Length: 240
Image (cartoon, rainbow, N blue to C red; front, top):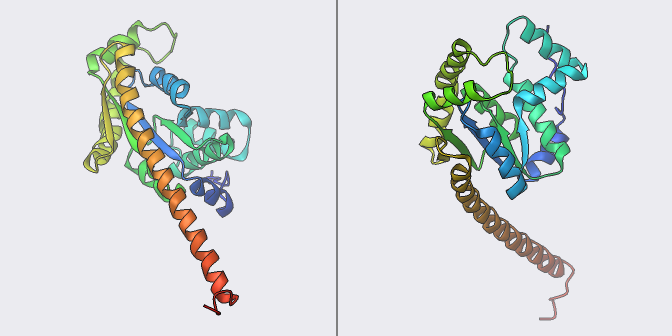
């Protein structure tokens, strides 16, 4: 089945997302690293909108849309959903939220996802929040939690660890190489982990505010210059 990627594909929709200059934070960590819990705290304390690529794909499948049917068909056939499809769903969710601050959870899963997100949206993340946790601790947490998940068995858990190490860790390493990773020791209790998370977000919030003030000053200067040039064109200053 051919991929249907018409979700939010218009240039106008793309521009409206980019023009908002949203703050995007990628949240990565192995299964059981606790990133879901921390995302909930970040939403509550810092006003970010939490977007999960997996949740968006599942919701699209349930919707019965052309994209949803395509996604379901590809997954049933054992194929990987194209990065562009996932990115378009994220882009649409960002546009519809009305917010300008986003946590994108569990994405990008690989370098192809990363490149597609930046190419399609024109947005680079403010930083990557990486929850670093030993495999033994993540395994213990998954086995102890009472979620009744069918995939919470040793063999499947270790396969998920392997996929993360092989596909997602290179994404973390890429962003680390350009100074965009905030690494959090996620083996500690939830409250201690969030103290480190708060420090990271407080720092980025100050940078965003500073950038916003600079942008406002620049916009004001442009308006003043435009106003002055109009006065010259209209001959207001000729007598001087």
